[in-house]
Image (cartoon, rainbow, N blue to C red):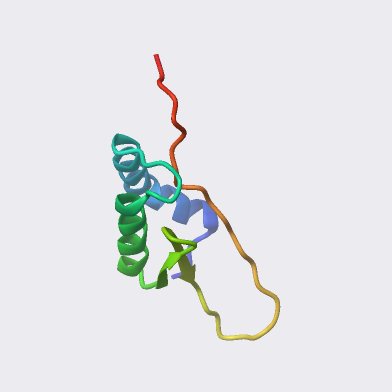
Length: 87
């Protein structure tokens, strides 16, 4: 049975929070995100997304392909840390 976007987001909330915490426990600077990229790639593969790793050094490209041809949507997200010390 298809879920609404909100229902799917609620279902994934706990899992995504754990992934976010894991990434924040091991911050990596730009072009050094080896651990983060591996986690992102593994997570995408777990949910059946085709993955192309190593994009622009440490980037990860997840490809979702629908049944129809035509317009596409591209989403971009940063996964590098900033070199700051928080108090």
